[in-house]
Image 1: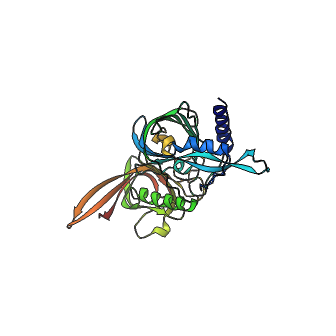
Image 2 (image 1 turned 180 degrees about the horizontal axis):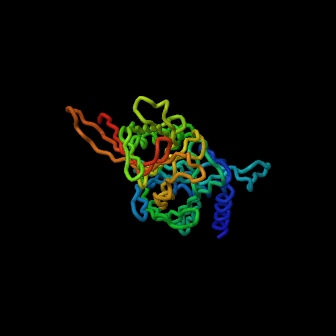
Image 3 (image 1 turned 45 degrees about the vertical axis):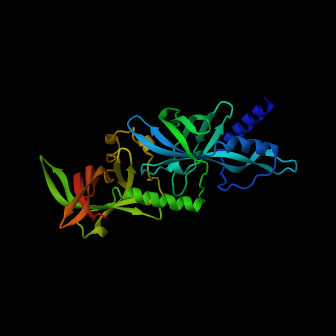
Length: 346
């Protein structure tokens, strides 16, 4: 029972203290130490890649959870010579496999595992931190059990400890491929670029504006781009295809689920307008998201979605994207917009 008590104490201590510290992405050979070897033995069967489904109220998302040990200098444990003891820390990383990209996928969950009961707990606490590229993510935790070192059944909880989904995962590999911080950033940029293909384009159409008891139409263009360096989206709204200089710039936020685009006043990249977490955004009503502030009547805002279809024209196949703005407020007036972007399909 002494061994069990020691391991439980170490795991709890690491879980609490590591939350406010950066985790070393490398895995070196640990020193030959009884305590270290005990922890490594516990984690050996847990490490690996697990794949399965995250079932939420209205959707099921294919996901992957990777568990691996990383060396951690524990400030509460010192060696006989007074230097900090390097101990193995179990860390988890979540990945969505349906095409969405979320900041939480690039945050490290600190894990606690009880080899006697199979209880597995992973916890991410933002602690006020914000990554210059990924932005920030809300607090999340995963609580469940590991069965036979091969299957995980767990609940995913938000910062209010409310269950937002349940997951069942099976181990697909004992080996976790690690990436350096630079490689992770490059991967993030590329995944964001792939996701932007769902809605990026130059949409030409008509802005329908209400005037008195009637309405008027005017030529209108919305161009949505992806900026690779910052891994963010922006848009330019203008009155004609030929006048981008005279247009207005908008920040763009994409909600993968429920497939919505949010346009807001451009504040320059690096501010607060980042990719939003669809885990929290899906519970917000679309009507409450997109109104012009009464305290700033000159503010720009819009909301909408993109419909996609394929068409053949002159023996060439095209991907046609149709942008529908349910609401637009800006210097060109207020109203609704529909426009199309035609791209040759591979």
